[in-house]
Image (cartoon, rainbow, N blue to C red):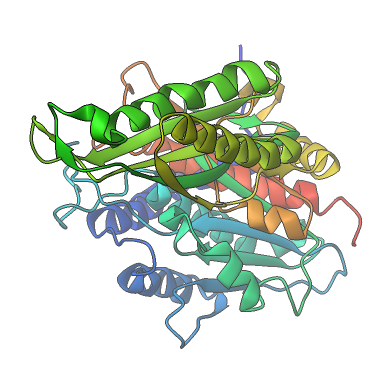
Amino acid sequence: MKRAVGPWTKEAGLLLPTLRSWRVAFHREPELSNAEARTREKVMHALDDLGIAYRTYSDGFHGVLGFLPSDRGGPVVALRADMDALPVTEATHAPFSSRSEGKMHACGHDVHMACLLGAAELLHRHPERLRGPVKLLFQPAEEEGGRGGALPFLEHGAFERPGVDFVLGQHVAPDVPLGRVGWKKGPLMAAPDRFEIRVRGTPGHASTPHQGPDAILVAAEIVTGLQALVSRLRNPVDPAVVSVGTIHGGTRHNVLPEEVVLTGTVRTVNARTRERMEQWIRRRVRSIAASLGARVQIRYFPGYPILVNDAAATDLAVAGLEREFGADRLVAIEQPGMGGEDFARFLERVPGTFLRLGVGTPSMTASLHSPYFLPDESALVYGSAALAAGAVGLQAGPRR
Ligand SMILES: [Zn+2]
Ligand SMILES: [Zn+2]
């Protein structure tokens, strides 16, 4: 039998109607990356209602930085939730479904924000349990994929005055059972790099392919050739993925096109492999194109960093979670996932950890980003308690 949950979870359970109302409000009105104006207003109103101080930015950046003071001199912990939704048309038929056609909180960021507000309320009610201040980071543009929202937040001074000692975040996880929290030391998520390959052929009649390189054939060879990098050059025990996501070229069955454009993603969890993968791709693509007489242009776009959870900070946070939930509600994650996450940028600055908040149930078959993704609302209770307990756990650590 499972141990009873701790005080944070019990209190968060009593807050469920409020947690639900926040989540419903976010979910109904999703906003895409860098367009989170209404979402920001909702966060501001909630913090106003709670009597929690915060600051916003007047230059178009949609972040909200809340602050829970403490004069006890312990470490400063930053808790983070992301704010943006996805260009997905919701198909959940939930009573609080998105009212914006083509936009949906399909990655659970509505849940993340409600949990951060919940944790803020819990910690605000119990300043005696804190050893130091807590910063509340409501971060826009996680899904944006390029500059994202974490880097601009740091540039706006999120980790300064006072300096942050530890950072903690979480993401809903369908592969972790509801009511449990997953944790892992070291690499948890991949660097999601991106490429675009333009293959130049000789346009002409499909009946005379010998008159110039056929961009379609070269593109096809590139698609299959890239997989040899993953299966033969990369060390098999070091996870990596190369996927071609789009191929565009041609207008008619009997016309050879002048150009075919491929785009794809490269996922790695090891910095050295990340570097090498780019070199291998460039070399391989050039050699395939050269062997068939085609010209090729390769553009490579680095994405978010590899997300690496600090071992000591993870120990501190997990100790806090264990006191709250008991060991049997914690799940040690064995393998990194190949998704990317903007939170990695915060972890490049200060030690911290990124948790996986369980939302898995037998009826939950939808994955993240699916139009059917709808986590159960009890995750709001566990997620609020996890952030509060994790923050207190981290504050048992040293100031930097
Ligand atoms: Zn996402
Ligand atoms: Zn997400």
